Image (cartoon, rainbow, N blue to C red; front, side, top):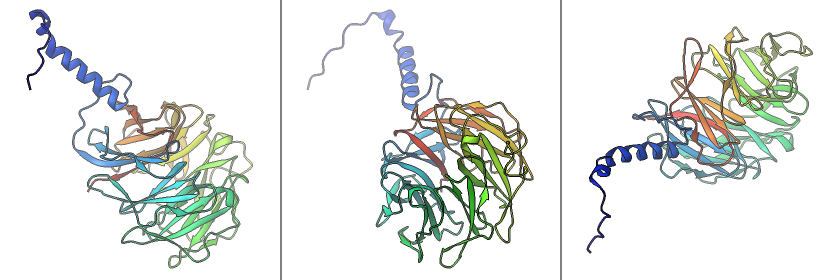
Length: 388
């Protein structure tokens, strides 16, 4: 077929075409990356993968994370989950990803292709939970997954089929007598499960039966926190626990008895007006992440559209930076496996803020091309796994 002739272009204008084409390509790259006008960094080879739970669209976005920290959508992303997909967890060897769907009252489970980042639903997914599931946690051995059901005042516990990721409720599940469970975390040794009780402002530790997955309340449960505890994380050596007291604008810090799981308030009595010296945030702390070298903790401030950064010293927290701006309504946050980059899911503007991390000072620098588009609506959680 004969092609149509191009319009005649003056010689002087033709000499500018390569420049115009280059400018157009740069503009398109910024638009596709969801940037704010910055030129995107050269991606480089893929080093890891990032997964983002989108509560508004009920799916999970998957991204290839380059050696320069940039994000590129994985083939087939986003992957369907369930209504209100919010919290996520993965096993220690990154074979499976679990996503709580708060509006569907179930848990999606995916197998992870750690060479491509592609997610595939496991047999039987999704799996029924209690009402309004939120926090999800997996024990370090990858045997059990735990889900906090806020409206049922219970925690569902499932045994994980190590071959295909299928889930089976353990005897006695769901475990009750828990008040509005929200955040969940497992101690690094896999001995204890910690659960935030949202409505009564406490955190409850449970001993995990290593054979059955059953939950046994720790004597003295539960332990007082500040108002509306949401964020919850144990430090990598298992000695300390940190709680984001959302409506009190503080972080509560506790020492963990490694034998019993009992908690001791590090920063003073639970009735103190400040959670710990220097930890007042004033902007509704939500989620927490600890840097892999264990020296810094980062907190999303949902009302301040920012991150707070603290230095850790034997369980105490000291602020080291002014709040770092993020997108609107920052929720979940995660480091890449090396700790070189930090990513924040911004719920309102559907973006992911990306920063390089100075491992010596804890300071953050926005990456070129950040923020990146989340490829879904209302992103609320993010996590990363290494490529293999």
